[in-house]
Length: 392
Image 1 (cartoon, one colour):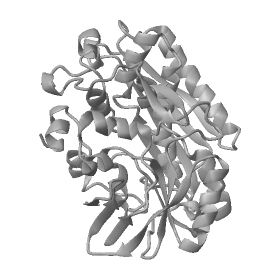
Image 2 (cartoon, one colour; image 1 turned 90 degrees about the horizontal axis):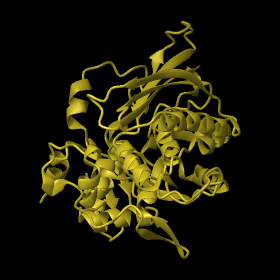
Image 3 (spheres, helix red, strand yellow; image 1 turned 90 degrees about the vertical axis):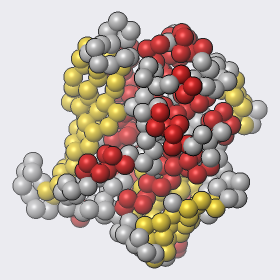
Image 4 (cartoon, one colour; image 1 turned 180 degrees about the vertical axis):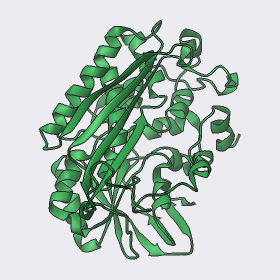
């Protein structure tokens, strides 16, 4: 069975081809290669400033959180979900240099018959806790309220989304002017940073439909019929061997529940990026948040460049487990999952060590993972962990 068929039958896409086709003719903003769309300063009309507005959700990760909460009674799993949704906004915005005075508004749609008021309270309070942590690092994110709707006719469990708005100086925008000769510094998505309370498996909020169905047992289809789309053919529904509380070795003699490992909250790099920008901004040519499209994400933000990634960080236990359970090819794995790093910084090799040192000061591993060459069109050559050469 092809990997593409597996994903298509589950109603998901690693490449989002239809979405990109739908928006291809839309205005790309002031800086077309910037990681987020940058608009003129509509809010105040100052030509030295610009506006950003960004929206994202935790995606289908909420389905897994729902099952884990029902199995364990652990409400804290919902704090991870709200972090997922917020980080998918903030870290995208940080990649254009926006790291302060950001307004956030939530949109939560729930099935009231399944998602209790206690869960809603945990989501709202989780947002306060997370933004308070950012403030300790000098990052001001302001919660401006939002909408919580009971929409059980159209939402199976709960959908958690945020919209972010900010205003910043145009002179501070990172435009993704990625150059021939740049090296790529990759920052690990896994481990435990100085501002995280527990080990992070490295999961973001991409690929969760595949991870959930490929890793976990069909028992969950029977126990939690609200956790998946019943239009999906049964042979693609919860086809793995794992149960949520099965123990997984995460190294150094430590183990973690499989459910908690996959539900690891999307790591924010905001504290790291703030320090990088404070100390290094003029030397940074580009930053990429490896979300949808994972290791191929950069191809949407370069012109006529050949990206070479031939020295990647080790693949952490989470993604090894997903691949072992799914049997998915390396080529698809690197296109769906970050596989060990979710932030890339593009700059001159002479400046790379400073970025690595900043990252490691937060206990986040980092290294030069590749380089940039001129090319015809936008291409990527990646060396997988088994030594195979993958081309995109």
